Amino acid sequence: MNILRNPGVLNSFFYIYGSLFLLFLLQFFTGSEFLSYTTTVYTIGVLLISWVFGSRLFKIIGVLFITAGIVLSLSAGNSIAAVASHITDNLPLLFFFSILPWIGIVVKVGGMDSSITDMIQDKADRVEKIYGKSMFTSYFLAIFLNISALYIIQNVLWRLFENEDDSLRNTFIIKSTLRAFALAVIWSPLEVIVGLTVDSTGTSYFTLLPWLIAVSLLVGLIELFIATKEFQGMTLDVQSPEIDSKRLIRTLLKMLLLLVSFLGAVMILNTWAALDFIMTIALIILPFSFTAALIMRRFRLFLKTGWSTWKDHNNHLQNFAVLFLSLGIFAGGFNSSAAPSMMQKVFGYVDHLLVLILILIMIVIYGLAMVGVHPVATLAILAEVLVPVLTPENALSISLVMIVCGMGISPAAPYGINATMTAQSMGLNPYKITRMNIGFSIRMASIGILIAMLALIF
Image (cartoon, rainbow, N blue to C red; front, side, top):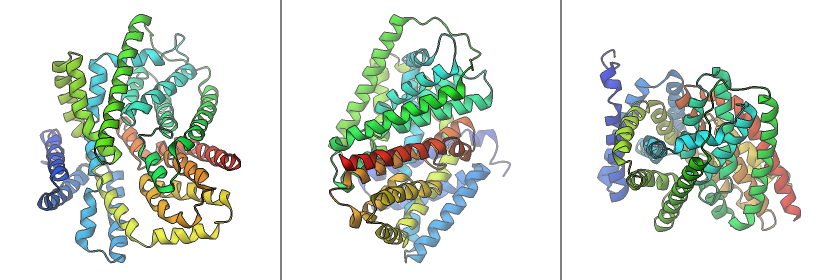
C-alpha cells in the first residue's frame, strides 16, 4: 500500500482517467457492444483504484451507494450484470469534470480573468459591495457558460480573498457563486432541467419564461439584502489597483464574444445531435478552447498551461470518480425499484389541493437530493408520477415549481455537481456547503411555490 501511495503513482492518475475517457468516447461514438463491455469492466477497476485513494467520507458514501443500489436492483429482479452496467451511467459527468479546466485556461491566457477581478472589486474594498458584484458576474457568466462559470469565478475569488480568514473566504465564495448560479440557470433554455420539465409537462418555454425570471429577480434581490446585512462593515485586506476603464471595456467585449460563441456552439450541437446537455458541453469544451486560443494567438501558452493544469486536476479526481460512479449504481437501482410507484400513490392522496402537490414536489426533490439522487433523475421520475394529477390548468404552476426546486437545491445538495465541485476545489466537507446554503434553497422553493400559486390566478 505504501508503494501505491508514492508521489510517482499519485502524479500518474491522469493516465488512468485519460484512458478511461478515451475508451468511453470510442464506445459512445461507435456503439460497439464489445467496447461497452470493456468500458464497464475498466470502469469497475477505476472505481476500485479511486476508492483506495479517495477521502474517508467519499469511501463511506461510495460503499453506501453501491450497497443500496445492489439491494434495490436485486429486489426488483435485475441481474448482477444489469447492476454493473449502471456504473457507466455517469461517465459523461466525470468526463465533463475532467476537461473543465480547459475553458478556464482560455479565460486566463486571454487576460479575461483580470477583467473579472476588476468587475467584482470595490474601490473601498467593502465586502458587501464585492458580494453584489460577484453575484452579478457569476449570474452573467452562468447564463452562457453554465457550470463552467463556477470554476472560473471561484478561482478568481479565491485569489482575491487569499489573505482573508478561511471562514470569511469560504462563506463568501460558496454563497456568492452557488446561489447566483442557481438563479441564473432556472430560466436558461440550455439548462437540462428546464428542457426536461418543458418536455414532460407540455408547457411552453415562453409561457414559463416571465414567471421564471420573476422568481430569479425576486430571490436575487432578497439575497442581496441579506448579504448586505451579513457582510456590512467588513473590508478586504488587499491593494486594489487602479482600473483601466478602456482596457476593461475591451476585454469585457472579448469575453462577451467568447461567451456568445460558446452559447452558439452549444445550440448548434444541441440542434444537430440528440445528446444530453452535460455530454453536449463536454464535447464542446476542448475543441472550442483550442479554437479560441488559436484565434487569440495564445495557443502555445494555452497548450503549456492547459496541459499541466489538466494533469494536476485529473490526478485529484478520485473523490469525483467514487461519488459519480457509485451514484450511477444507486440511481439505477432506485429507478427499477417500487419507490417511484409508491410516490405516485402519495401524490394521488392530495390531487385535489394544488398547494400540497407543489409542496410535495419540493419535498421529493430536496429529500432525494440529500441522499444523492440528482434532480434530473428525480424530475424524470416525477414526470411519470404526476401524470394523473397534471391538468391544463395547473401545468404552468407544476412546471414552475419543478424547475425552481430542481435548481434551487443545487447550492445545497451534498452530492450534487455544484457543491461537490466546490467542496473538492476548496478542500471542504460537502455537508458544510449544505448547512450554509439550505436556507437559501428553502427560500427559493417557497417563493417559487408562492409565484406558482399566483400564476394559477392569471
